Length: 187
Image (cartoon, rainbow, N blue to C red):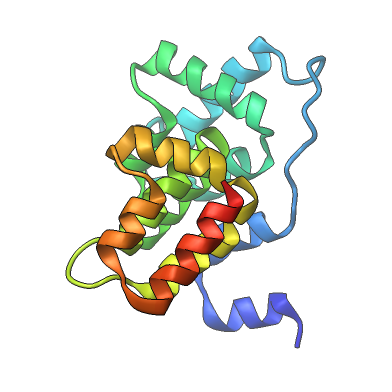
């Protein structure tokens, strides 16, 4: 079955639009001649106009900037946005979106702007509350395996414990040994 058809049958609205934008791989390649400071200022204004600057939110406009902008340009857009409007793109998303679409848009933005911190946060989130979400924890450890050294450094800086420390405090037995081995091998 076609992935697009499956997504259309399972998702709808703004969330479907964001997922399709992400899946289409429309992120531009960074070109310093195209992605200038002036372009960052223009895109910051477009982001504002799509959100705070309008009655209602133009989610398509927000998603286009989030999904199409290369990391370096998105960092410059964020700086321009802070300079002009006094707060970050993250704060703008928090003001304009809510629920699952807010969570997804913030995740996408943060994976571009601060990926290792975002990944560390996902590992912590999988262990939050009573009992651990073992599926999420395992998925994150496996998914982030290639960059676990950087994720571990971010995790330790943010939470004052390593990923191995978190694993040992949250899960036990052979499962803990397996995750610990994967993490230790990766870092």
